[in-house]
Amino acid sequence: MPARNLETSPHTAADLIQSSPVALALKILGDRWSWLILRDVFLGVRRFEDLRRLTGTARGTLTARLQSLVENGLLYRNPYQTAPERFEYRLTDKGFGLYPVALTLWAWETKWTDDNEGLPGKLTHRSCGKVTTPVIQCRACRETLRASDVDYFAGPGARSETVHPPHTQRRRRSKTKHPEGVDKSFFHVVDIFGDRWTGMILAAIWFNQHRYDDIAAAIGISTNILSDRLKRLTAAKVLERRGYRDNPVRYEYRMTEKGWDLYGAAILLHQWGDQWLVGDKGATLRFEHHCGEALHCDVTCGVCSETLVPGTITYNR
Image (cartoon, rainbow, N blue to C red; front, side):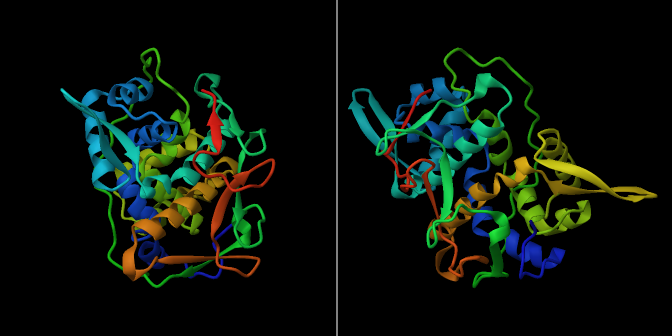
């Protein structure tokens, strides 16, 4: 399911990907702890100690991530006690805008998590009263989103200033026993989607950059980080490695069904970044659905097709 109607040489891909709304979003959200914090704030958890218990985040890390989410306008601090002074964390409109992305990531984790210990609970849609799975639909024609039904074009912000994530190697996290009370839902998906470099690699492959050097050129990544992330994505069965040359042996990377299932979340993140982060210069990409309309997506109830918005879903841990 390659990108269509778009010149995708590595140079063009770099112009479009590195300054895209997704790249801007990953600069803010490209770590697992930010997503886990947002998961719980969406569920009504607002106080520091509750967030620390449910996410399993170290105190210093949690303080830093909350500060970043406040500084970037996704959360705001609301005082609830004066002596001593205490604050709770609430979503801004900008933060609420990520709700469709969070629902889509929940659906992906529910479908693809092998370990039942980390399986999310059930979502119930209050309007129809049914247990539901979120579905991404084109707002114009209400068809379920498929990557093969989407055309890509360079947008008005193409060739804008690029946004490079820092060239640092993130520490490998060993498998550890989490303290009692930690909510392990989302743990699998944030290991993939909650890393700025894996998100950029997936974007490059969606734009037909399948070979190692082409991916590196498209996203401006150092070779050691690229090798590490490709190994992770292959081990997680998001990508598969295929040989295209025998002497010397060379491989290219292709999206699996599991990987393509993250496509909708990426489209929604692009949509959010286009609204909240791009500004007057415009997005580097625009999308058109096969119905002929500009692509704008809604996340809807899989039972009654009503658009899902905050407050319409109950979640059982």
